[in-house]
Length: 432
Image (tube, rainbow, N blue to C red; front, side, top):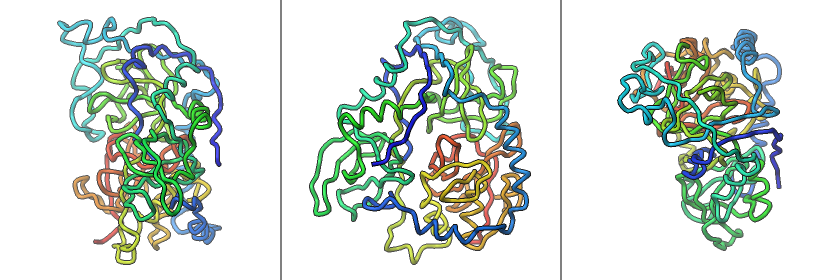
């Protein structure tokens, strides 16, 4: 069975109240089927792309842009000392502590995500002071994330994924996916002709997975300790992300309560979070954001039935092909769907498989397609996200309010909610 190594780092977090309140697990999730985790067929397709390809001459332009962003990033949590303030119910300087104040509204608009041009602060913002609480060790906090599960199961999927099915057996409808080291609560064991299946609960998904690809017992708990990540869960509808840890800095996007976000470090009144290939800052307020160690959970997803694929529209074929690479690596500047791509490399290579060519640069892709409104999105259309008004990330819409994209080095190719951050543009390359 595959194990995903985790680099150890020193983390000191004061989260007594957060842990007491419990964490909200990340809704995220791949084998292409329960009995085979290989994606060799996709590798064969990609092998034909050695050498140059149409529309890749702008790779260097994107490389320069992303390199500039990468150089500005703070070194990840690894090898740092991370101190996170406890989530006391009433901290000095928060709205809870000063109800009579007219200027204590926190770093949130409370409105649906807006475009970059509309993202201006509408209320005064206050950075809450933090309050010292008894410290817990990193090991204790990781243990707490694991202890939330009475009968922990951990996906052993390597670079692929495990299908979660509505019923036990490979004929059951797929309702979700578990990526490697994603966690679930094992509810019961069911014996079928092809072996044992577990009925599980993972995030919002309850269904069945093949037991051959689930770690259990001490092995799962030990690996779960290593797999736990420090993430921020947004508790309000939308939350401003700023370019610097200050209310005087500009708002470059907004994030939603549909996702969790990797925390790089805690500063004085702020959290630095990872957003795709660059970082931003969110206010440190326990009424707006909860931070702590957590294990990832299943990604809700229901593909079209295999029997219908021959009759699928081009849009559905594009999405089905893109889904084959779920769980694969993010590599900055990469152009291999099996060995690693960045966000624009992912969309470029998926479309190239269907004879549609575009540049390896997010800004160019946003202009090469035909602009459409977000309300008119269809499967296979591209969605763009911006930093300070400049497009810096692209994803592919797959239907049901979700996108697939090469998100970041830590997350790889994954599925998220369309509004995991504020989309600023959508385009189509398809006529229907």
